[in-house]
Image (cartoon, rainbow, N blue to C red; front, side, top):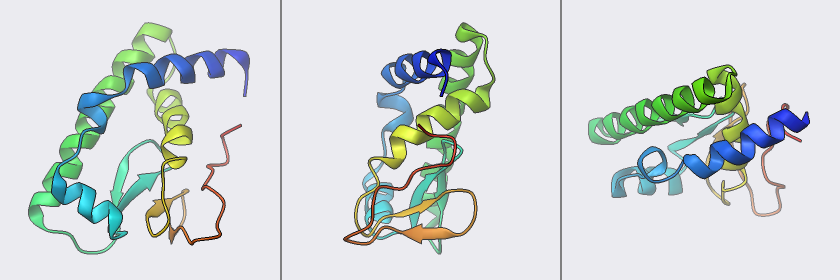
Length: 123
């Protein structure tokens, strides 16, 4: 990862907080059950069946994330996808045992002895 990318990542993660990462109790429960998880592109994804309310909440979280990623990308003169991918590197570190994640292929569930998931673009 270049120095510029590290700076973008560090600054981006400081700005991405509350609104974009806030989640309802339903989303929190779905994450714990492995039905919703982080994706390598910086957004939440749905794995399996969830209620319409959880689906709507995930969509709203992703809309908020996209808005923040877009704002940060414009401020830093980089692609939105670069901010989103850099954020995914950090989000994957929070994936706990029994939680789902997607590194760009099939969904996986983190096991007790598994290392933290790490997208290919992460340092």
